[in-house]
Amino acid sequence: MSDASAYLQPLLRLKPRVAVVLGSGLGAFADSMDDAQVIPYRDIPGWPQSTAIGHAGMLVVGSVAGVPVAALAGRAHLYEGYTALQAVYGVRALHELGVESLVLTNAAGGVNRDYKPGDLVLISDHINLLGQNPLSGPNDPTLGPRFPDMSEAYSKAYRAVALEVATQMGLHLREGVYAAVPGPSYETPAEIRYLRAIGADLVGMSTVPETIAANHMGMKVLGISCVTNHAAGVIDQKLDHKEVIEVGERMKSTLIRLLRDICVKL
Ligand code: HPA
Image 1: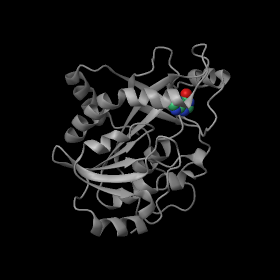
Image 2: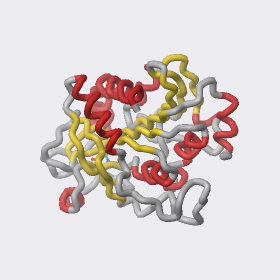
Image 3: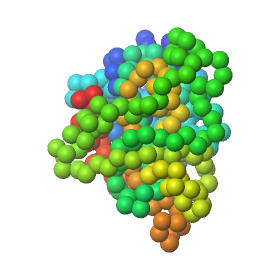
Image 4: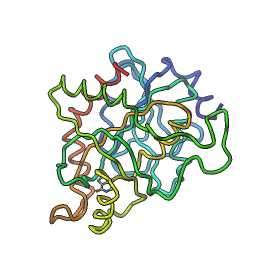
């Protein structure tokens, strides 16, 4: 057992079934849980600390309409200096504690010209441009196979659940391919044209390591991007992290409702 799960197991009052990783500005989901237990990342052995603006840095375990859920408010990014392996530490620990379903949210730039800030997009697939893979190095066969299949990295069944929930809410969810880049500089317009040419609809700096590690362990993954801005060069405007946070804030209540309803149906 990892140091984190050995620390958490006797501490937690609930055994979480679903984990939700919350992206920039999206931490408020954790506030909506019942009987919540809040554990700061700094208290959990081995857990990477989040240093990014808009990332709280705490694990919140509680109940969402009766379903035991672990919310990760804050994640480790490669641009903070973490490796892809460090970025998946939490997902691996939660899997050890019994979590089988992983919901990953993020803020992303809209590469697809049809996307607007404020759109919510289901991730249908990804392109790993991080230059790193969390599974590099010796394989631990107790976690999963050396060469894990990634042909349905984002569960079709979970996407169908999310679409159904969204329709009931009267919410239009799109589907698209997420390209992960290391950052922290935003892309150049030429890089965005390249990403569009290779089939990306969204660009961001997270999510892909967690998806790879989860698939390795046989977990099912749902990915939801909040389009916080047009990617570079799509419109004649500079990118500003403040805009990313603001749009995340504006979408908070919609995304929380969506996440809550999804958690109950996974
Ligand atoms: N690029 C990369 N990451 C992002 C962006 C972007 O435009 N917006 C939010 N995260």
